[in-house]
Amino acid sequence: MGAPEAVITDLTRRVADAQSIVVFTGAGMSAESGVPTYRGQGGLWKNFRAQDLATLEAFDRDPALVWGWYRDRRNKLLEVEPNDGHRAIAEAAARIPVTLVTQNVDGLHTFAGSTDPLELHGNIWREHCTSCPATSDKSHHWAEKIVEAENDPLPECPDCEALMRPSVVWFGEQLDARVIEAAFKAAEGCDLMFVIGTSGEVQPAASLPLVARRAGAFVVEINLEPTLLTDRCNTSLFEPAARVLPRILAG
Ligand code: BJW
Image (cartoon, rainbow, N blue to C red; front, side, top):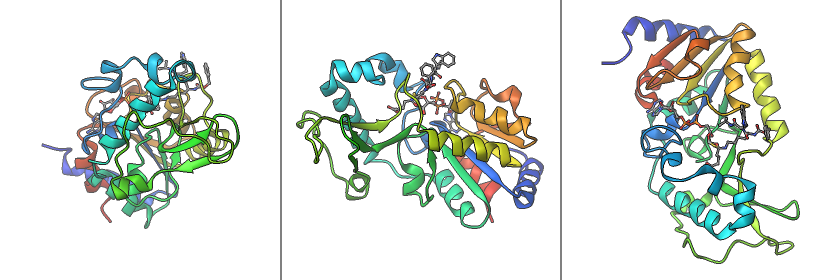
């Protein structure tokens, strides 16, 4: 059982009529690829304490522990593929005006063919130096299936030999100003927003649907269950993203 055909037809028409669409995704977008979400059943924060692994304090205290966790997550991502939802978004963006804003760090939107997603919380495949402006992109590890040993030496900056860190946004850290500003601008200017697979618990990302709604956009939530954002959306479809998105975004 999925959303009734009439609901899908209405959304397909809204997609066709829209001048500017924002697709805003969270961890549920990748759940059907086999990537764990953060909260809820099987979520990362059920097995790991965020303050031990996803803060700058944790990294400064024990970089080997934090790097081990990120390497393990990268290794697990080598085994997954983008799903039909990721692919539907990438294919739609080639035809219609879509801005993709994601909280996900897994890179799966890009691997599915989306170009330049606004990655609010960074990307697990990128690294940057803790001391100088050097950066490094390990996205090719996914395509080439390069496994990293969790206890390999910690990555050093090729320019200054200081410690590299994952280019993700930890709790208490500022989001990249250019990325979050572009996301808010897109939210303010869109006439249709899809809010997909996010609990809406983490700020400032969770404000994007509110900004879009206040600016007059029609806001559609796709999730398995009601969230903090449900009351703020015009409509919610409670079914798996990878199943329903291809129906809504088909050309
Ligand atoms: C499906 C599905 C399927 C499942 N189909 N759906 C008090 C009030 C307000 C804010 C704060 C506060 N105290 C502190 C803050 C700020 C803090 C924050 O928001 N904390 C809240 C938790 C309270 N925010 C920050 O610190 C941010 N920075 C910031 O605000 O800077 C200014 C500042 C600094 C200091 C103090 C105050 C302000 C930074 C946030 C960084 C978030 N980082 C993470 C980790 C990334 C790195 C990594 O992965 O290792 O980003 S945390 C984690 O949560 C990750 C995600 O991107 C993010 C959001 O999670 P998401 O995507 O919503 O996933 P889930 O698991 O929560 O939900 C999944 C959903 O999918 C569920 O609803 C399922 O039902 C659904 N689902 N399968 C469709 N098949």
